[in-house]
Length: 331
Image (tube, rainbow, N blue to C red; front, side, top):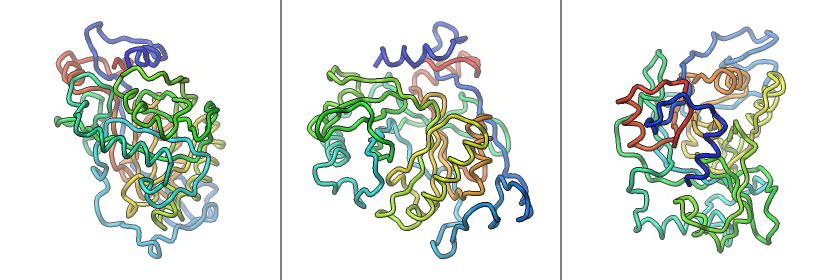
């Protein structure tokens, strides 16, 4: 994966010392939601009551959990495969998608668990960021724990653009943020090998999505996300147009935490940082675009977790060498 790292690193001018191999993204700042605006206001970023501009989320009818804390409700994960299916009518359980790529990839991951190939220091993976409540958090504030080996597999509504073989799909690999073309169910294990840095013969393309917003809209899995997901998709697209921001929004399959719907994952910095939000409503979407996409802030009240690309060894070196938070990521 070294060549992929070099491609991504070339997008960011480095100010890190030569011997600093840590992820040095701009620091995240926390922000609170604005106070509730009157319902006849021209805009309502962050409002938590029904307004005239957005559809009402029937939170009581859908039994959205409004009581449990959101923070730290996302299990750690190392990498994320996003399969571009061009549709949203996925089966309730992706592992039951007979002959589908998601099913084949999940089965390959299960077979591969015995190899324990993630138990090493150097692979690209996501690590959780620890955020101090009410204060800023830099990329050095990482949880001091063993990185997760979990691999996520998610179907997305984005269409395949490069694959031209039968039963083949494009797959986005995070945190590398590259598109792997012509992935078929028969090549699921080869895709997994590719993620570990093994030669595979796949053709790859740089992802055009510097900022990618994934909204859980898996209606066959859970009514809550199936109802709220399309609402958020439209509200986020409207907010992007209002702010004149170029980012991509897509509906995706099960992300976990349906009780906290709407669920949203925001990949920024070419996929190197992942912000997970819960209990999102259409009235939050303008604020989310302005704060989390444009200004690189997290909204504390919605936050489930933040993950950042890197490796455990690199993060330890960063802490020891006090690498500048404005420097580029060096995997």
